[in-house]
Length: 231
Image (cartoon, rainbow, N blue to C red; front, side, top):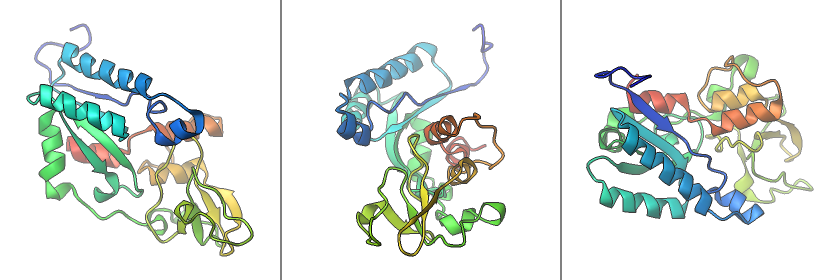
C-alpha cells in the first residue's frame, strides 16, 4: 500500500537468477539446481503475498523447473499457469526458449492468441546499416559455442549461416562472426547483441563490456513483453 495506491491495477514481473538452473552451467560447474528452484519458489510465494493484478516470471526451462511448475499449476489452477515459450515464434530475432509462468489470463493469451505470432527475422534482416555484419562474415558462432579449427565445421550445433535466426543471447559471452573458412573475425559488440534481443541499439549499458553483455543476456526481449502485455 505504500507504493501502490488501493484500487490501482499493477503488474509484477520477476526473473530469478537462472545460473543455478542453466543446464550449461550445471554441466560445466557441477551446480546443484536446488538453490535455483528455491529462488523460483520464493518468487511464487511473493506473488501470493503481494497479490498483484497480474504477474509473470521468465526462467530457463530446465527439466527440474518444469516439474515444479506443473505441480504448482495443479495446486493453484486459479492463480497460476505456465508455458514453455519459443520466443522466435513471436517475432524475436533469436531462438530463445524459456518457461513463462504467470497469471492464467496472460498465459492463456500467449497460448491461444494467434495474432501474437510472427516470423522471426534473420540476423541479416535486423543487423543492418551501421550495425550490419562484417563484409567477410559468413557464419555466426553461438555465444556458448566453440570456433571450429583447421577450417572444419567442427561442432555443427555451434555455427550457422548469418542469413538464419540467431542463437540465444546469453549473459556469459557474445556471439561471434566467422568467415567462409570458419575463422574467427570478432565477437558481436553490445549494440549488435541489443538488437538481437529486440532492444534499440542506443539503450544505456554499463561501461564495462562484460557487464553490458551480462545485462543484455539476462533481459527478457522487450518485443516479447509488449506482445504478452499488449502495450
